[in-house]
Image (cartoon, rainbow, N blue to C red; front, top):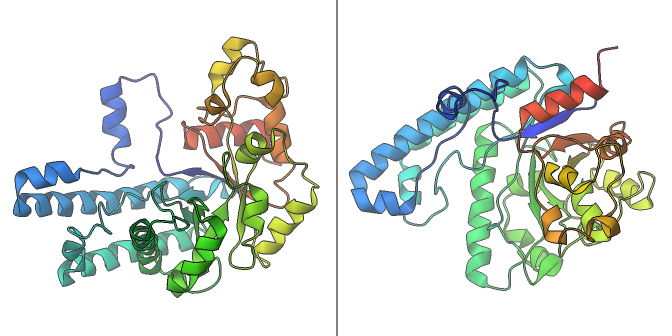
Length: 339
């Protein structure tokens, strides 16, 4: 069954409520965090107490979010988990807190419950380490920090009961860094087996496009981001392009995931209508290319949506939209009604 999913955060359907009321409702589903500066300002005991409180909230919030996803139609049971569940887990000064036996025991139990819930309701899960996870950097310390950050994600994946076989869980990164694919190949042996089972490479809009990612397909699957590809190549990739077949092959029999987003709705105020194709040359007469990087709240452009639907027979689609679950729900109601 094809799937469409959303990333990390829950949005309440009644967005007309006050910000205070929305925050009260949504915080039950969404993770919290803190800052290193705050923790340094209050002393070790208070900082660790706050960390314990945040971690407990975040594990509960992920369970609540999964319980919500479990109520959705099967096609919508796809979720990217937040990377911020365990604040500063890979930071050298904070890591000893997480290595304590009692903390590890709590983490194991909490993540095991999340994994069990996802499997019980057939929810496809993923993660996406942030922009500071740069395995292809030419700076050794950045690489070491990036390896630690990726292994942080691998630890969460392992505790959820995944990472035991190839692509039972997707953990996605961009190539990034001055050394690019060559740098990634050089550090590949340093990744744990769990990390290598889960890692995927996604094309970006600026530097490392789809062809660069396909150059690493012998190591790991490629996540085709059609929005990034549109910006990088200044045209939408044809669904029948030979490279799309190569992306599918990189998943070695597992169902591929692709990413889909649209540029901001503010383009409509410039005369780019929802029922017209978005063409890069025309857009660049009024905006900078960087303005196209940002994600929209909803999937507002009809032509782009029809284009994305041409991939759904072969790919699961992760929506990257600011309205999160609401964008996925709206798309599903509009284009994928029950038979």
